[in-house]
Image 1: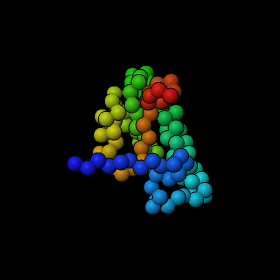
Image 2 (image 1 turned 90 degrees about the vertical axis):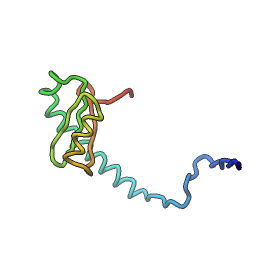
Image 3 (image 1 turned 120 degrees about the vertical axis):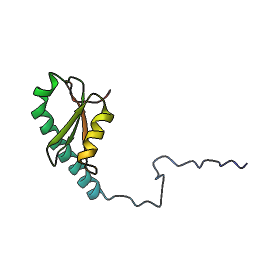
Length: 106
C-alpha cells in the first residue's frame, strides 16, 4: 500500500492554482449583493419578529426575500424542509427568533 505525502502549501498562496482568481471588482459586486440580500431578509425579520417571538421564542425562521415568505420550526432541519418544498433553489437566510436573531455563538 502506498502512502501519499501531503504537499505543503506556502502561506498566502492559492490551494488550487488552476482555479482563476476573482478581480477586486467581482469581489466587491458579490459582497454588495450579499449585503443587499441580508438587508432585505432583516427587513422581513424585523417586521414579523414581534408577533412570532411571543409564542415561538428561540425557534428557527428561514426567510426567502424575493417572495417575502418565511418558514418557522423548532429545528433548523424542519424549517429548511418547509422552505425547500416551496422554494427548492432559492437563496434562504436562517435566523433565530431571539433577541439578536443569531443561530449560534459568535
